[in-house]
Image (cartoon, rainbow, N blue to C red; front, side, top):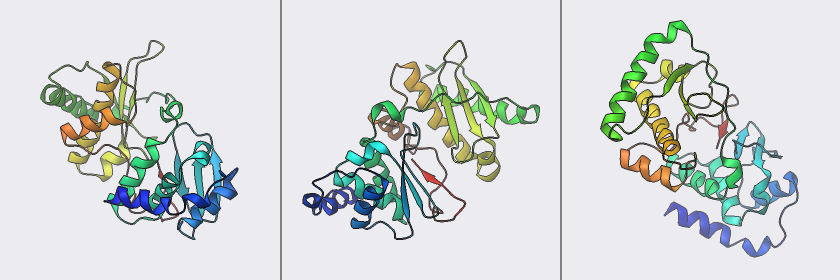
Length: 241
């Protein structure tokens, strides 16, 4: 239902959008015509390989590829920024990611986590959970993987890093996530990253595309691992795809 609304609302204005916007200012005008929250005062274009759309305070940042997006994708950006319901925002996010440039959605390889001794107990618990989930959900098919607790992660809850240049694969979990959320949520994030591990070991792209979503639904987990965006309009919170 929400998806039909996203498509239908923008279709009504499609005839007025014969010429694609050329810069952030003209894209901002298009988004305002589609109902963008008036608190957004400027739109900046980016080439960020990991974030397609983000906003903070009065600034909206959009990957330059969306200049040529169809109107229903612009409408999804408007909904993503302004919606107060989780369901609508997730549906908008799905529409946005479906039109993300395929060569951009794969994130650059992050720095590996330098583990601290005081996190050893947490790591041991995560390793144990990985073994149990591997047996329960993947038939024991996943390989052992390095697991670390990251003190750098702020917006992301977890990160799977594939093997490259002789370095072993790694799953990192945000320490602030562990401190603030129930352990069940931390294990949910671990399982999310294990689906990425399943992708990598099966030769699939590391993304949140169809294969990922189907596997996530099979396991009964959410197809994303980020903090709740319900507080997105606080100045110190960045909502990003």
